[in-house]
Image (cartoon, rainbow, N blue to C red; front, side, top):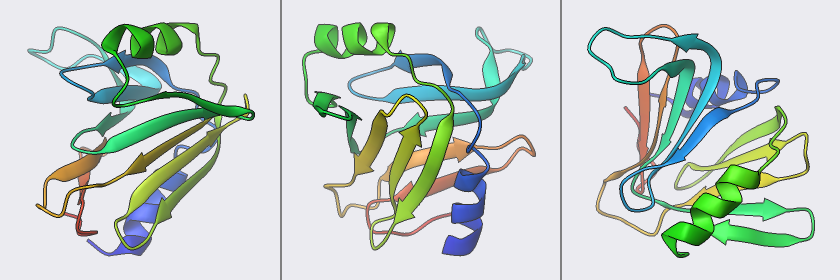
Length: 143
């Protein structure tokens, strides 16, 4: 997939506020955007846009500094996520060469991913309303 399509898909998150932000296995982080969607066989609802931070490092920042990062203790991460007031996405950027993601929110908070892997593992995956899954790996490749 070319990088223009990736940027367009990520840009579609602008104006949408995340809900049901969850810490998954290890430091996996998921964010739901848009309308609630119930899929057959699923135990939980997802958003029409579902962002999964997978095999990457990530950091959540406030205007005054780092709040929490993917290497922090699980309890620290969950506490930060549970007290966040995100607001809607005000800016969505995909940085070259590794296609790292930067989301800025109306609250002034920022969520940044950065790959430290060159193994080709997916660092983030965006599921879109049209059934597409855009996955980006640490080498800056997508599918």
